[in-house]
Length: 113
Length: 114
Image (cartoon, one colour):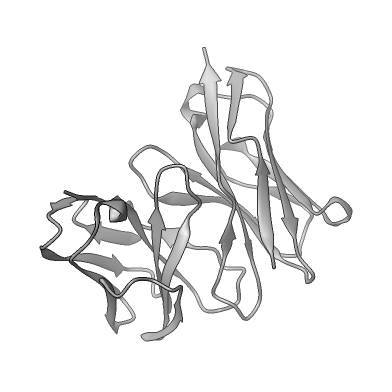
């Protein structure tokens, strides 16, 4: 069965530091990959998506992610964290012909002043 | 108004009440979803509608009853709920079954069952 694993339920960084949120997936077919962000008391918002074009995907708010097929990974990065980046981040996998997107358990990002 | 709108934002109901959650999307999407988000648990897919037909029902208890009267509206009818049903209920929409379009989510309804 397909699955998505996010390493670390909580990540804490200092303001201005690199943000790295890890995501690995299991898939027997090429997937579509997504990162979503959820701020308190809000729904999820699409940050970026990989759909078999460029392996380095740029998203909103300065985030980017790189698809590495050999490592089955799709890690999310941002060079310099802002206080406003504090939120929960979800990695997700989708497939052609199906409606069931599989979400990871989420990683809560804390940003320290 | 654009995006996905959910009402109400907050709902407190007793276990014997009947209530409904409403979702409306203004994006022209043809698929709509209900998700349940509980504390410390992954997002749980409840129902999927494509072109107003239910295509997915993830073993959801019958006390949750979805309705999709048209491609822009989705309801979740609730009756005789249990305290463990307290959660954030999220509606989402997407364009088709291509899998790569991504979802647009509403802000959710925070449900508390007392």
